[in-house]
Image 1 (cartoon, one colour):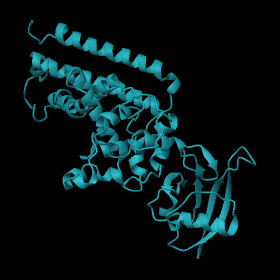
Image 2 (tube, rainbow over the protein chains, first blue to last red):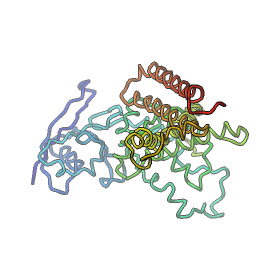
Image 3 (cartoon, chains in turn orange, yellow):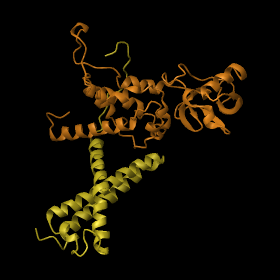
Amino acid sequence: MDTATIRVTRYRPETGPEPFFQEYKVPYRNDMVVLDALNYIKANLDGSLTYRWSCRMGVCGSCGANVDGTPKLTCASFLHEFKGRTINVEPLPNFPVIKDLVVNMEDFMRKLVKIKPWIIREKETPPEQGEYQQSAEELERYQQFSSCINCMLCYSACPIYGLNEKFLGPAATALAYRYIEDSRDQGKNVRFPIVHEMEGVWECTLVGECSVVCPKGVDPMLAIQKTKILGATNALRSILMPRGGR
Amino acid sequence: MAAGVEMREEAPRVARLHAILWGIFSLGGMLAAFLLPVMIYLTGIAYPLGLWPLNGSRDPSFLVMGTLLGVLFVFVTVAGSLFHGIFRFQSALTEVGLLRLKKGLEAAGYLIIFAGIILLAYYLLVLNPSLPAL
């Protein structure tokens, strides 16, 4: 077995105000990922190491960390990819750290609720009347945006969110756009004002790192651009057709 | 509406003016990307060097500067590109973290760009020797 050197950020507010790095040597096989190394450290070397994880298969979105300077899911980062190098594992940037690798997700959770990530109907119909039907083409229009696992890697990679935490951000916009494009949803009038606030999509400067780091292949930058086009069209319509425009 | 979800957010304010400015920026970007290189090639490279499609032909600037439609084309292309530039400059200020200086630099940038656009319009409509008297 090879040995990996892992430098993990430690932050224990009860013992010291500043975060510091702690180095561990972890034996590994080729099929082991950074999360396995963290679990090894916790089980065998240092039980006080604190981090989030759950599914270990890239679905739950809990185990995000800054691995070697890039926001990644630790369950999807293989140790052998860093062979011969020290692997730095830090908490996700742009979020306040609670302890070690655990960050405060409250701001993100508030934004998720804000965009109302559920199907809004003008009038609900009882289940006996059947499903709200949708064609394959209609599904395709929003499907990629529904793959978001709320791992927050895109927020960590976004320099604009780092500068202005009021910015709605990539994942929340992608999810809002997912419902805006859903043919079963009738909540455009509710969501448009939220995404078209100054701190909605307009703060985005098209850096595009959100789409680069997404582990599920979602393209939040595309969602933001499409939402901007809808915003500009609506604004123009409201001027040209003040009675009929939105 | 999901029951039990607390909603204490302030009522959102749609940034309508910014949306329209973004629309112009986006149109300006398209013009800058598609039309400006063509114009630069035709008037700045192809004509002076005698390259295709202007080998042996007369000064192509007359074609656009000599008619009102041509003048409009030049105005939209150059003004659109300038506007795209200043809008992108705003974004660059945010990206490099110059948030404290942003408002002042933005104001200076817009002043320069709008002065440039007015000068452009003045040249095209008043000083342009190729344009027939209106």
